[in-house]
Length: 154
Image (cartoon, rainbow, N blue to C red):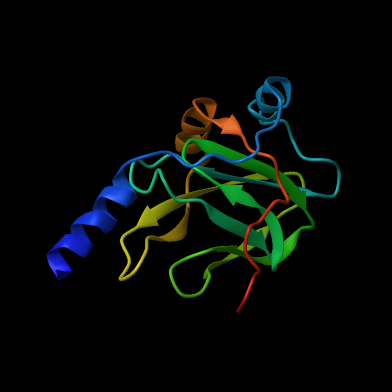
C-alpha cells in the first residue's frame, strides 16, 4: 500500500501542469528587459523553471507579504525597499525562508524549485547569478502578483 501511495505522489509531482493568473504578453516582455528598478528601490525576480512538480502551485512572499502563487514556467517581478528582507516560499509543512540583502538600483534573481516531501511536494529558493537567470527568465511568462492561495504562517 505504501508503494502505491508513493507511486501516486510521484506521478502527481511529475505530471500535469498547474496554472495561475498571468500578466499580459506586453507586461511580460517589458519585465524581460531587466530595466533598473524605480529610483530608491530594488528589483526582485523570482522564477520557476523546473520539471519536477509541474502540477503544484506554491506561494512566494517577501517579509510575509504575498508576491504571488507560482506554477511551472512562470516568473514574478516586484520592487521593494533596499535592506534586509526575508524571501519565503510555501513548502510541505512551513515556509522555507531565504534572508536577502538588497541594494537600491539593482535587480536580484532567485529560483524557486520543487522538491519531494513526505506527504506532498515542497519548495525552496536559491540565489541565481544574473548571467544564468536572465536567459532562463526569457523563456518564461510573467505571472500576476499578489494572489497567494495560502496564508503566510511562520
